Image (cartoon, rainbow, N blue to C red):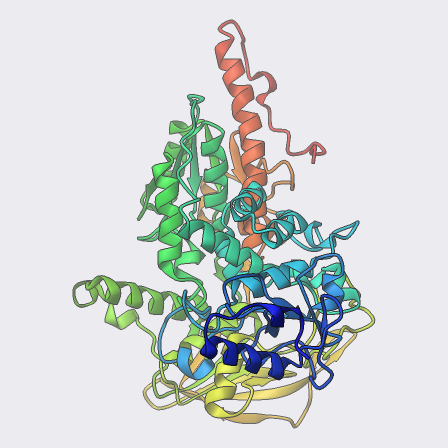
Length: 591
């Protein structure tokens, strides 16, 4: 017997035959709104999405039924979505395809790998609407994204409202949706008993659709305060601070020492993770909203920082933590040993000049670092280490190996790493997957430290020597007799960053903390110099893009309070002395 739709009068014999065939294949014996399929293993079909079943002969005439974990088919519903549907993140492009170009890892519009509207709704339905959403707390999202709200809006198809809620807490979701490691997913309540919601994918989908649909337009402030702010540094914290201060009505100028705006977004993160057109698109929007950008302005070198301070009502320092951790061992000065940012920046500059057709006239060939045909060893893990691996693969390296000092992480959370902390577990990032696909093995070698670089007669790196290490209560300890020599033409040091460069802080006389970061309390962001604020990695230390946005937004609020008070004081013609602008950084901040 056919199900209820069999009573429909079909117009043609061909359509009737097609309908009967579909009905027979699906064994359409149904009592209510569900169909049981006992012979399947899971709800995810061969195309990488939840399996669908439609009532009727046309694929566009209704929303399909979606297969659940118990094998039944039913309309998408959110009440028990986290129980009924599986986590299904949108995949990257295949490794063997993407290593052949510098395009983004995420599939482009129209690619079959992209999730359909139905699959996005299914993934949004997995959000539990839990009573205490840890995903948007300090353990999850540093900018406190309203994740359950915009997940629900996506589920209901309210995309224009979703981008409004997303922008309410995050200035640049197109950046975080691509490069953030998603600590929100690590603290997702669904992750306690199952896999977390695909929060990062949904964020990415919201903002990309908003740009495509023209929902992101310049917001010109209706009133201006008459106060001016100079922001030094155009990374994520500097751009976030500038955006917030501009919307508050202040006149903002952003100074960047490089030749392009974006900081690490432009030169520190490779193209395959973040297309530079994406950065330029947002910068151009900020420019239309009234923010002034000045490039090739190295404050403290070719621009006097005290002169800058004298010309603006406030100075916001977003310098980043750009001083890399070095490896002072024998052979460090050999040709072929480079910091990660030297490697990544030189590569990105060459790519941009190639796109613009200015490579021949502007390329500084002597500063380019190539991995082509070389045995590459990346010393240090993390996101930057993975980016160096991915860049080396696209250079067509001979081999690539990644040294990590710590032991291999466990496959599941350890007892001392409970939810909702970030899960310190073994994972395969995009660079590791590319090496696996091309060379047939994971590039990572754990519990190892580099002891010496070895060079040839011309001073070029040709090998390095390592020792195994064991972790003790006093830290890593070398294992005697475990030395091993590795062939190496290019060694990339990716061991993190220790502090901001100090020439600006010296010129201004800024206080530093014990880690040589600029001293300013979180929530207050004032330095020991009146009218000078600090935020981002130069205050916090090396961290995530999303934390930089958090710091930029917080610093903008503190700076705005200062400017409002200063404007009130200047409007009082009879007021004398310094008044209430004495520095308050020594007091407990009002967080």
